[in-house]
Amino acid sequence: MRKDIKFLLLILKKDWKLVALAIFGSILESIGLAGLAYIVKNVVDDVFIAKSYEKLVVVVSILLLLAVSKQIGFFLKNYIYPLVIFKAVKDLRKKMHEKIINAEPSFLRKISPGDLISRATTDLEKFAEISSTIGTNIITETFTVIGVIIVLIYRDWRMFLIFTIIIPFLSLALDFLGNKRKKYSQKQQESFSDYIQHLNQIISGFEVVKLFKKTIFFKVFERINETLFERQKKSKFYETVYLSTTEILAYAATGGIIFYGGIRIIKGEITPGDFFSFLGGVLIIINSMQILQRGIINLKALSPVIERIQFILNIPEEKAEGADFNGLKDKIEYKNVNVIIGNNHILKDINFTVRKGEKIGIVGLTGSGKSTLVKILPGLVKEYAGEVLIDGTELKKYSLPSIRNRIGMISQEVFIFNDTLRNNLLVAKPDATDEELIEALKKAKANFVFKLEHGLDTVLGEKGSRLSGGERQRIAIARIFLKNPDILIIDEATSALDVETEEYVMEEIKNHFKDKTILMITHRLKTLKIANRIIVMENGKIVEEGTKDELIAKKGAFYKFCTISETEN
Ligand SMILES: Nc1ncnc2c1ncn2[C@@H]1O[C@H](COP(=O)(O)OP(=O)(O)OP(=O)(O)O)[C@@H](O)[C@H]1O
Image (cartoon, rainbow, N blue to C red; front, side):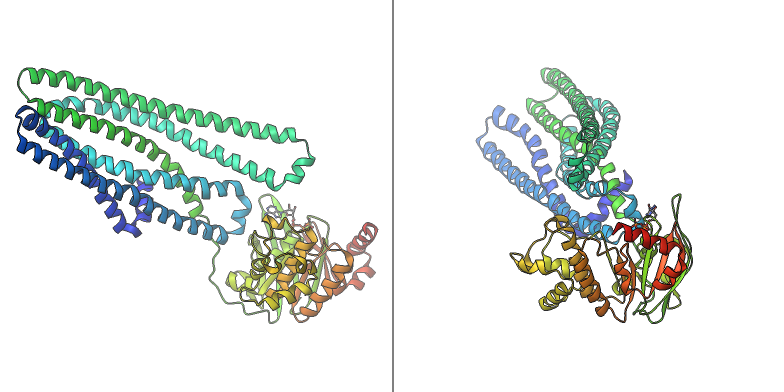
């Protein structure tokens, strides 16, 4: 709990002036209510019993003042607390977005996107809702309870003691049932994130879903849905039992007060005004306590929500520090590089050198480690042992942003985000002119975009769903012309293009990146035409290295690979 309060205070600190104004609102509202309980005595004793006109005017004026104070207070607390929270949540959203964008790739590979999305959306909304009610309900009602307690003690401390009998019972109920609710609220949240994750998967993989037996998807969903329902049911059950228990206790105390107060009036120990003022106060307190109870129940659910939000805020980020990489001057060297992830020994004792300007072809069977090998360079795979030297300096000593500025990578999977074609291209060069964009598109033979209804302003659907696989690849290639990197990595990035387009595009790449270094993974022999040297991989190892002719003459792994490829083509 202390951790949660610290988290809340930390995010509210920035807007402390607004928070202070809202607290002032809470105090005004509480004064309005406590004052009302207080003034009832004067209404009964001075106006109704003593029948004084002057007192009537005074009492009504005070009542009006109290009403105005309560209303001003209500406006301030009801508008400003949520406003402060919305501002804080806006900042949190920004921080989360930054955290996700800057996250360590190894972390993102492990986590499920659905879980992360549900933490950043549902949990954040829940956080906003609960923490707003802390101000509007808990703070305000606490002031009201304190104010009214002062009035009650002042009116009759003996009767107040009777009222306090319920407090230990209340706190017991609060503890036991509240904890139960907290547990199920957390479980409910977990189930909800399973639900989002499932929907996410069936929507993004709908083509596969449609072609397989749907019964399995329904069965998996049924289990998720049933668990979510059960947890919601239990959470609501404990909340309701909690509320009615506390309510029963509160009404029992009221009954006791009426009984005891009645005896004291009959005995002449207190005036009817004292009694009604007390009873009015008790009714206000019961109402405040009910609101407080609900607030506290919600507060119990805040802790797991904050935990889930903090998980995102604590995502390990990539470091940006290091030496500036200003372009390759001499060579890239892999020295005894090994990559072991979990139980998987993906790269084994890799040793090879790429000289500036060389065009290296990388071939090998699927799963032989080709992508892992090249992903080391832009820091997408950092879990390697051994050395990767760029111009003699270990890769990890360079600042990642400067490395990534100089390395371009195109792969089979093309990321097209849900925005205009222009913005999808500008990710590669934010200050590019339209002419540059069009030139890049032409080089990538992406002529189809010139037929688009709104040209560069055409919005490409989510995941580029308006585009075919080959069209998406051409956008990715256009981006690479715009980025104009020093080192270019091509990971089967032309596999979805027809042979003619692929040849054209490869020719453009060859001319454009004439002096640049290229590492190119391919399954197609024709694409290897531009390679000066070829590396053959098998089972995480480099098994052959040489020019195309040397390797063919060797009649080893590459020769075998060529024979298979030729047969397949
Ligand atoms: N992050 C990871 N965690 C665990 N295993 C991984 C990870 N990344 C890759 N692998 C495994 O490492 C092996 C090599 O993968 P990699 O993608 O480098 O091969 P590849 O030669 O590029 O394959 P393909 O031609 O199919 O793209 C595979 O068995 C893959 O499952």
